[in-house]
Length: 252
Image (cartoon, rainbow, N blue to C red; front, side, top):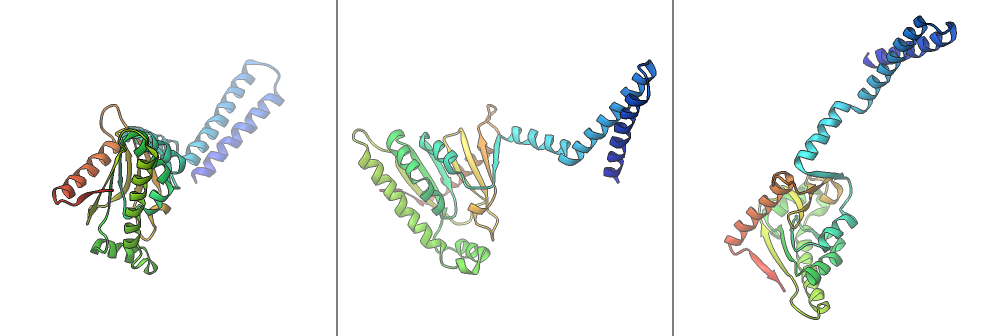
């Protein structure tokens, strides 16, 4: 009904404008009619645009994103954007179920950061063969049963390769360090946090895998608040809890 009303206003405004132009000689009355019908047509177009793109809703979303420090929303994995931030970071926090796809995709960037920045890579993965992993495998697909734990173990080997390659490539000084911990129940979203300035948060919504789900690219806020600060605080809290149980060890 609203759309019919909008198009009716536009039609009347356009027709009235044309009639005013074609049927009258230049006069004050014609100018008045021309102004009225032109404004009517413009109002109809603006009303249609507001309905088509939900201007009020879009503006509200933009304001919320700015307040939370959400820079972009992505439907695909991080790609080169994530690699660039990893390469130049000194503290890299990663939290995921297995992080297999992530580490494989950004292995070269991790090696570069360890070699050039002496970065500290802190990674939290699920505990292999835990009840959490078993439940997640069931949630994703029956074909995933028994697959996630081997992925986690493979990631530990990949991280060891990163440390070795960085050490071999660095001729002087020390390279960075890779520490790994295993959580049991704490995962809510997958996180990649670079220093305190950039982040990437991916929803975990089985049966879809994280690489298939939407992600939010985050930036730091001058106020020290926002989603990036919340993600960092969450990671650090989980890390400290696992560390207190002697559950963090260094990959060599």
